[in-house]
Length: 355
Image (cartoon, rainbow, N blue to C red; front, top):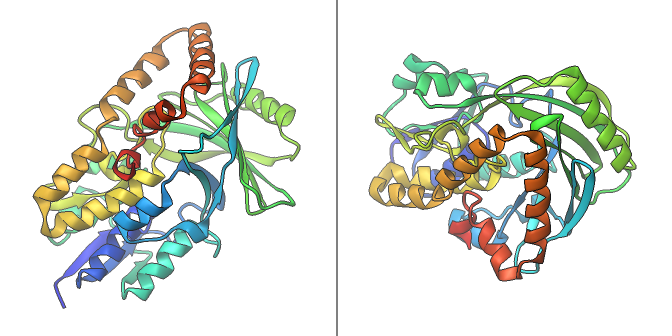
């Protein structure tokens, strides 16, 4: 049996790293600040969507997540005063997954996989702050997610994020999603369903959303969906690694970063689940083959700089310009050949590696 590797964080990236390290013969200890897996209980369980190539992802990470996903046939967009329906092309597979603590969640699937591989867990173990990170054994993996405190301790540029959410129930299991853009946020909101759960979520970087912003978003959801949401409340969504081209990084001294803690996240639309899973594999590789892992990390985040430029530009133009740009983009994208549409998905961290 090889040495013990510490993994800080039992999210997607940390669990993917732990599984791969255990299969390489390492003793693995996952240290998680929460009392159990699944993240913040004030938000979860919640559905989340992403493009996945399940076969390639399983071949690359060694983890089959297909039991925890439901396919998305299409996506609706409500962009200011116009509504669009975007059917995913035949050569792109998009799915919804459930996050949280229920047995049907992706978190539970990864947790049970890790346990079968002999990974040990220590819950309620709050490893945070620069001194605590420095005290970790060499080659420890830090996968603390969207925690502003971690970015501060690691010296990684980030943006504060502000959000509101509400939940509901639906009688069906199918996965659906609607994306909303409008003057109520500089980013976007969405409503979605999966496994009987309905969720409404709106967020914004840089400055807080006002109650009027939340009410405007709520009215949009009510006018669009057949289900009803209740209990709107402000949530601490966390921070986003979308401030600087210097944000993505694999190494912090003799420690290894994974998931959004290492900036493996799309800075424009905040796609991060696929990047988390792939970066977990990359982080595990970095334990014994750092040069190979660095090459994979650079490939994983190839689209970060151009997407960051688009994010910055979109945040700074007037609302009417944002509306015109978003509407023209969706109209044009829907008319592109399927091959060209698929190429655009390669900007999602991890998808290019899978495709």
